[in-house]
Length: 134
Image 1 (cartoon, rainbow, N blue to C red):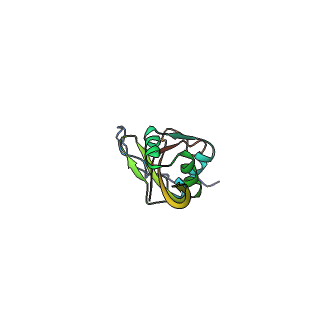
Image 2 (image 1 turned 120 degrees about the vertical axis):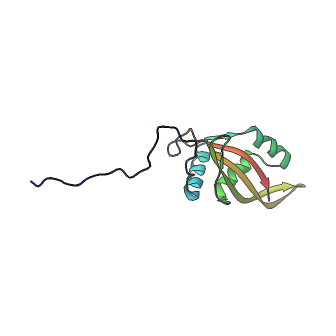
Image 3 (image 1 turned 30 degrees about the horizontal axis):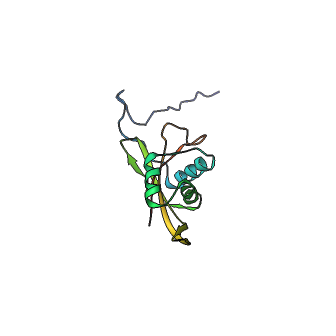
């Protein structure tokens, strides 16, 4: 039997043993939206106090956010938040808004983050950050 003469060489980054302060790459937009939908549909969402406050001021709630996430599309690329070490995604959809006792269709944009400490595949946790009518 001939001897295997292949040589395997590591060609990845060289680490100096120090932890990196750089954020990891965001999940791709298409995969990010799938993960967000999966988390919300599984009931794995955290509603921030800022989201609640803005919802009262601007006239939307977590059910409206759920509808936006279920029906919506990503608006732009994810942005990194160094304060919380997570990636934020903006999702927009046209939904019904009750104003002056009549329903009209309006665009609502919701900003969410993926909790970086949770497993995105098994059990993603979605954090509702804010929202606004467009």
